[in-house]
Image (cartoon, rainbow over all chains, first blue to last red; front, side, top):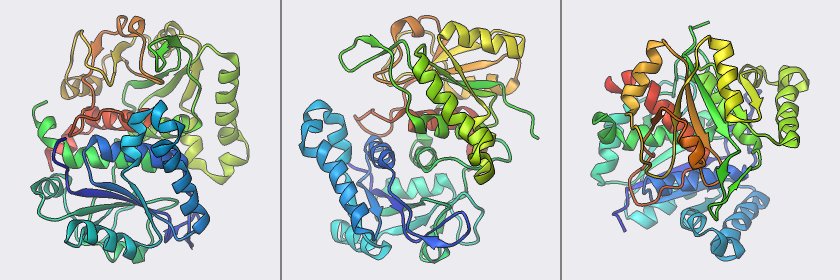
Length: 195
Length: 195
C-alpha cells in the first residue's frame, strides 16, 4: 500500500445556494458518491466526507455505501468497495473539521473551491499541491453542490482556489468534473512537468 | 463568442468490453450527457458525440437533450441548453468519423483513451494539446464506457493517450472524471505553466 496523501474531499450539501441565491440543503446525487470516492482513491487521499444535516439523506448515503461495502456489490465489484470505504457522512462543516482532527491529530487546513471569482486568501494549485504533498497537515478541499458554497462556509476557509475556467466564457462544470480537474491540478503537476 | 477549439469528445457505447471481457453495447448514463457536454462547452470544443447503435438508447438521448434544448428546461436553465446543443448521436464509429468530416471538411485525427496501458502510437498530453490548439485538423478524443474500448476501436486510432494514473495503484476513475482530467490536461497547460 502506497503512503496516503493527507487530503480529504468534502462535498457540502448544506449550506449551499440554490438558483435564486437562497441558502438551502441540496439533495445527494448517487453518482457523486461513486465518482468522488473513486477520485479520492485514485489520488490516494484519506477520505470523501459528505456534509448533510438531513437524516433521510444520511441514510441514503449509508444504504449506497453499505451495498457495495458488504452486500452483493462487494463481491461483484471489489473496486467500488475500495473506494466507498473512504466515504463518511457528517451533519455540518464543524463536524467535518472535528472528524478530520480526530483522525489526524491536527485540525485541517480548509480550502474553498468555487465557480465564481471570490475575494479572499488565494493560493495557486501548484503551491497548494506542494503543501499537501509535504504532508505536515491534513487539507480539506471543500466543494459545494447546488449553486455553490454559502458565504458563511467560504469565510471559514483558510484559502481559496481559483475557479476552473476552461477556454471560454462558459463556466458550468458539474461538481464531478470540477472535482476531478481540481484534484488532478493539485497532485499531478510533477507528472505534467515531464510532458 | 470565442473561436472554438477543434476537438470532439466521443463517448462509445459499442463496441466496448463488459466485466468479463466480452464485446457489448453498454447503456447510456444520463449524467454522462450532462457532464460531458458541459465539459466540452467549458473548453470551447465542437461537440460531444454519443455512439450507440441501439435505437431505444438513441431515443433516450434525444429525449434528454430536447427537454433542455426546447422544453421547460431551456427556460429554467439556459446554461444546460448551451451545453446540450453540442450533443449528437450516431450508431457507429464510422458514422462519427463521417459526421466530423462533413462538418469540418477534413477527417478527424482519432485519439484513443484507456485506463489500461496499451501498445500503439503514444502521444503526450502536452504535444497533443498543442496540435489541437493549432487548429489545422479536427481531433476526436475517444472514450469508452463499460470496461473500456474494444480493441477494434483502438486499432483504428491514430494515437493513444496514457492512462490517468493518479498517485497509487488504483486506476478506476469514472468516465466523467477521466474525461474532465484528460481535456484539462490537453488544453490548460499554458495556464498551468504560470502556476
